[in-house]
Image (cartoon, rainbow, N blue to C red):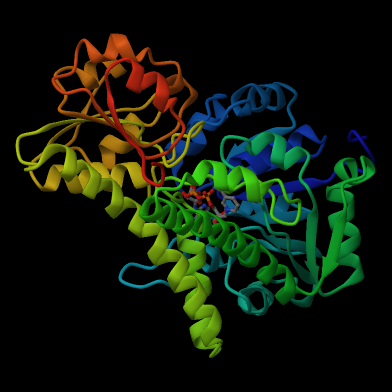
Length: 443
Ligand SMILES: NC(=O)c1ccc[n+]([C@@H]2O[C@H](COP(=O)([O-])OP(=O)(O)OC[C@H]3O[C@@H](n4cnc5c(N)ncnc54)[C@H](O)[C@@H]3O)[C@@H](O)[C@H]2O)c1
């Protein structure tokens, strides 16, 4: 038996940040799991017990479940189709090139590769974030291509995990959402999640369309909250007020809440930016102009934070060409090596494009960053990045950077100017050590 009830045979299609975490956590719940990816290198690495990306706590759990024989990897869709009682689709849904909408080609390709191997009653579960209406299209296509035809059922089960906390969020989520069209699909989903449900985590069952909208609505709300506090930061800067004190004072109201109310460089990563743009595209298609306008504003405010840091850098440096810029952080957020739509890397790239000599440090994301921006210099340590720098930019708020001794760093830079794009360093301590500290939104 699994930890709590029936052991199911679960397949996971796509083993990126979402899929590998999901596969490992499903195995840890006691299920038998077989996972596939089109990236052979990723599969080989995972099968050796090495996570292809940095996620705290994931690798030990991967090894534990490989050793227990509950988790395996394959490159064969025939094997996946034969194996699974439930098939989770976890492939990417990035933004299409030259547009805001979601690229659904990977999702449809995964379903098309799987369907011809479905010979018996089975459940396909969409976990990738998709525009409303996608699940209905997927189920039609899968049933048309599957030998089992209408015995193939479909559910949508959005994922809310945060990179950096992915394991804990997968094993003990705030809620589990089931978008279904049949009672049998709901019952099977309840069996998949029997252990977390038994611990009291709420399940919310709804139609497919509502479940699809829940995911993008949640991300849009979070993005809006971040952009809200960032326009407050602009207002504070224009008024000589302090946005951190403002955030503390309004965030204490439980209707508002302090989380996601930290001013700074705004959001990036593989989810929020592309999800709000895809949602805007869907709203446009459906003629919901007020949502188009809201999400456009949120996006514009967010991207404006990057411009603001570049303006501050210009103020500090004058001409950018030939100036040495040390950048602390490359990942889109701490505790992750994900550099997709990283604000830090976008700023670093723009400064380098204007002739600045940019040296970037990050505890774990430099290899990924170097693949995207090989022209930047990647420094082995904070010291190496900051040596002879004309300005230091703090752009990803790793805990390591809060431990920097400002006086020691001052002794190696050419100019002691810090721009704290994330508003998380102790500005008073840096100033006391002789630094000029510029923080967007603070006096
Ligand atoms: N990363 C997160 O924190 C997170 C959280 C919630 C939801 N999501 C959603 O999950 C989905 C996946 O995101 P991700 O961050 O894991 O992306 P990712 O790029 O890390 O992973 C996607 C994986 O799918 C694989 N793939 C592509 N086509 C395939 C196919 N036809 N068959 C098998 N594998 C295939 C790719 O090789 C890749 O390994 C997206 O829709 C995303 O919005 C992500």
